[in-house]
Image (cartoon, rainbow over all chains, first blue to last red; front, side):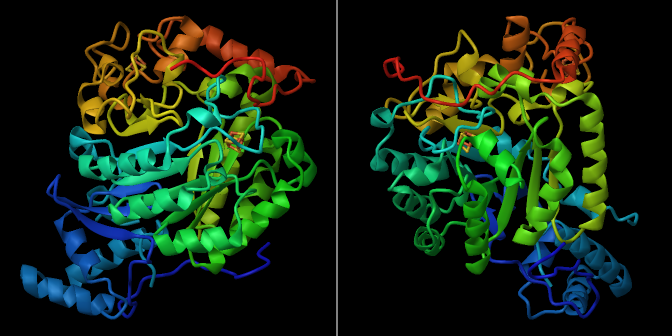
Length: 100
Length: 386
Ligand code: SF4
Ligand code: SF4
């Protein structure tokens, strides 16, 4: 079926290094006083936690590192934050919003 | 997947706040010229002439005003936007203004050099439409030779330049049986997204409805095919599936609600709440040549007329879905019931619903549908008066 590049679904694990592809833009909208994620024919309104995660998706930080930073900042249990972060990033990856 | 339901915190739906201030998207119909002649084209029957199109500077000004207003995404469309030689100049200004730029193209008039340049200027995304993956059938639908080969090439360039690609496939009775192959084509092209868009019956498509309407069985089958493919291609290709509302029970919130999420600028600069809204009588359309975009959005008569829910009559008035689907489509209510303030006949509560469904069933049941009326400029007529 696939003549050229065979592609597979990315599965997010603690060691994954997520990043926003160049065509996905996390932008602050001063007029509305909020952040948006601009994607092909889509606009998302991430909640505060999602914004914090997305800001750290630079292709260098691993999911584990992102989660432990957040766990510190929010004074929350690491395992819980890690699980939440992974499931959020998996959904975003399936929607084409992040790559890893 | 799990109880965290992250997409609830991260959904494209609750854009209520964003919309209240300004539209999220602007559809810029740069031109009505197009080398293809698809019989379902969403352009009006009375196409704008080349000599009446907005100038480069006027379009650039629209882009700047759009960004100031708070619009986030610009969809550069047509007709075929690449027939405008100044597309680059418009994209450049739009990207500089911070807008997310999306090129909606049939591809056949695009060159590799131009695409490369557009990418350098900041074009964010390309949406490439295909008529079918069967060459002969694609030719028959678009009245254009070798289009599919050209589209393959364009798709390759898009990927070569590492740009995101959406394949847009308008679906109707002449290609619905090919849906599995259309989906495979999009995967082969490296598309990250596919729009399986059953035709919406306005404008040219309405004129050709008897030739294009699929049967209910075909539509149900296509929904199954999409469901299966969506699961199989999770994380590889995102699906957008638009069903034909003739077989639905509730209407779609057309344009996400009138004057709520989107605005449309025609080649001549008229600003519309929806690309089909010129078929609705009683609306006054402002032009970007006369009035600021923000003022048109907030105060324009055409935008105010069906904004919100206060214009509604029974059964929409007081209906629990009034704020969800906004009574459906004004243009469809007009076309089918003669009154744009009526409930969209796609709604099962509309007194016209049964006749609406019966029309689709009767037309789709005919073994030999009538030939296409191709989308063409009517040569005899003078340019549409402003
Ligand atoms: S639908 Fe067909 S005819 Fe209409 S603009 Fe698109 S490619 Fe051209
Ligand atoms: S009656 Fe009007 S508001 Fe209620 S579902 Fe039908 S179209 Fe929507």
